[in-house]
Amino acid sequence: MNVLDSLAPTRIPPEDEALRAEVRAFLAEAIRDLPPHVRARSWGGYSAELSRQLGAMGWIGVTLPTEYGGGGRSAFTRYVLVEEYLACGAPVGSHWIADRQSAPLILKYGTEAQKRFYIPRVCRGEAFFCIGMSEPNAGSDLASVKTRAVPNDGGFLLNGQKIWTTNAHHCQYMIALVRTSGEAADRHKGLSQVIVDLSLPGVTVRPITDLSGDAHFCEVFFENVQLAPDALIGAEGQGWEQVTAELAFERSGPERLFSSIVLFDEWLAWVRTPRGRSESALRLAGRVFTELAPLRAMSVAVQEKLARGESPIVEAALVKELGTTLEQSIPAAIADDLHGRDLADVPLELLRTLNYTTEVAPSFSLRGGTRDILRGMIARGLGLR
Image 1 (cartoon, rainbow, N blue to C red):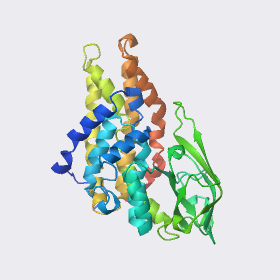
Image 2 (image 1 turned 90 degrees about the vertical axis):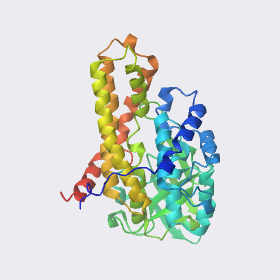
Image 3 (image 1 turned 45 degrees about the horizontal axis):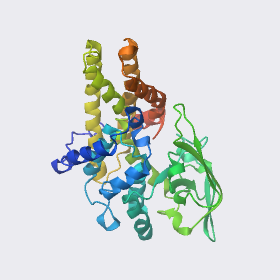
Image 4 (image 1 turned 120 degrees about the vertical axis):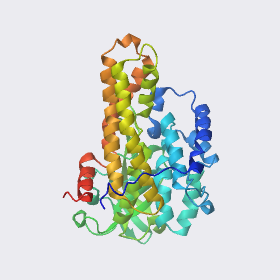
């Protein structure tokens, strides 16, 4: 059986679907004053206040055990929540990574003390994490990271640099992939994951301004940062196994399908008006829907595998590659549609939303693994190389 055979159709259980109406109503009130061009940032947007509100509702860490402050519900509960956040463009980037992968990683590999310290704070919307994977000259080639955490009497001495670290300037913690032994040429050997308190002496965080004017990416420098022994997650040298399992969470969710959805909805609302309606626009809407529906079904099927404790690395790569291709095609297609019209008829807010999404769309196929790397993984999974 190949990877495509393993993505059988899956339905979200009714008890989880039943949550949608409550979440939708809550968000409609919580973000009612945010214009579409701001909501288009969605999981890249930042609102610590909204994260605390969602934590109080029990909607962060919803899959984590109740003994650590989680909701104890199924992975499909979280899937429904995530879809609703993305569909309306809620600025949930503050807790996004902590909820999606940091807390589950700590739950799976962390010590009991780490679980009891970090996970309840994540679930309350109080502890935000960023991902310390990419480095200069070690982005897609993740195994060649050079940042080192050298064991010493106090725990580990950390030196190096991370880059493209989302929201690092807003986060308290980073889970970093580092080399605790060997050299970069050793590849997967000697890699470990550590929790870095970003307030420690020797940590410098510098935001990077992107083409759209946002500054949510950062570069992070470590200069003789002393980490305690309990900074290590899992076993020393187990980092590669841990980080590849973590990437399955990062690559398969609705965020790999819906990054352009606020723009698409704004455009579609206008197309449904007499001034916006055209046969070519209706054909475009139909094409997007026919591509989105099977991709969402694939994403839900991957979610089921994750819920069963599997690590569907190749399947997640397939969803991410196809999903980001669709995400990037939407602003380009909408731009073609609008620029063939009289722009005086097009709402200004729609144009602003299109402008932002067009500027940020190139990043969709970079974050979470570049297109070339993912296609190589998919080819191996299909037995083509």
